[in-house]
Length: 562
Image 1 (cartoon, rainbow, N blue to C red):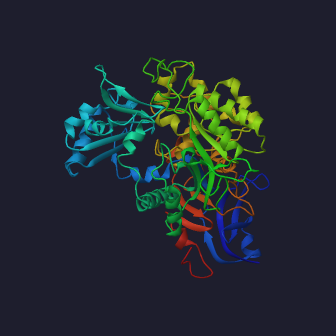
Image 2: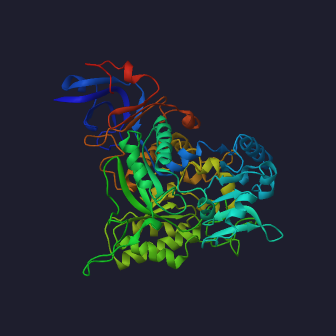
Image 3: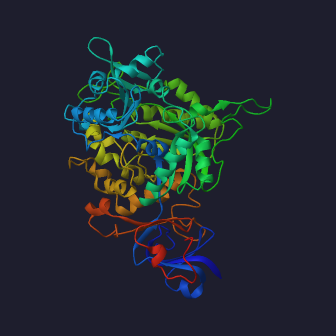
């Protein structure tokens, strides 16, 4: 038998119970045809052989919830994350410098600030931004994506717009907008800038894609396209298709379509009313490179922004909403109707819910949908599933719901989450082991660009459970390295109904894998986040090569095109 490639001298961790370890892999047409030892070189002939130099190899990382277009576009914005920003004054100085090189009346865009990490422990104000950029429009996006700060020029442009339901404009002591724009109210600001062009989105996808493969990401789920709060254009799906057509997409993508892009379509009198994209498309349309996964629905807001819907007020006050308990972006009855409509029309429903009240409400709606219109293996998801009481875990299991928490939140925003929840509620936050202990599938994800999306950093936090200040988060939820890697591979594949072709290294699966600079299964766990990705292979093709395996492996013919 002749194959396209044999990758050998690797320490393969396959996550296949039938053969957990191997040293060689045979690949044809982008799929694994055999896993074994060095004897594969004698049993099979290959067009190319690639020497992996004894490095540790794991399945390709799969980010189950991220915002790739958002991340790619933010690379051109002023970096106002912490570090390097330590105070509101630092942010204002960065805005002043960008304004100095921006045409008058133009936009100064910044991304990544977190008031919890600033010396003043507050958001910048419109007045402060006016002082450093009086002749520019300023729009600073919070790291959570659930709020932003703008200056007076922008406030004046949105003043005549009605504030959308599920959003708020924060006010100063005199009852005037202070520049902070919360949740759905951000749509007013976005309307001044978006939609962007398809070419601009394709460029963002390309830039993000290159970064992703350098970090070992071979698959990702884009959490919201075509409408709503996180979309950049109604033509966003076209941009993804165009990126692939131009050869600028190195990562396999599962798209979650914003529920705002779905419609009740005309239909034959003897058919159920479909709730779908124009043309009738729903979950599963596409191929192994680009497919429509589920529909994305927002229920509430952000934990560190204190806008998520909670049963009790946030610790120390400062919570949004009338009672200081946050609020729903989508009113519960409207949310329930959207979930029922999407479920009935065959969608995998993926609902953003962070606060404990929001999580409980979404679970009730999923239960109602399944009771009214029974379906098998729906795998409805709760994106983030940020705060969930112990008593609801069995309900998650019974309903077959997939929670999608973010491990990297633990270090980067864990201190802010603890401050918002208080010690008595923190054990309910961003559970991991609690899910696995009940045999609830656990995917790995980042929510990039909310935090650094490198999977090894997420795995590090899932194992170590420490915040940026060095304080423990919830040690009882710590995972083993094997469990964390499995979440970022097999768990994420399951969450997207793709476990039949991704997440493990065995015959018949896609040849997506990552070559690591250290054996993360044996090194001190404090070193996991410092481990380098040496190479990334997608469909048997070397998408990223830091150590020269493309040229260093002996080949039975030219290595060009590997």
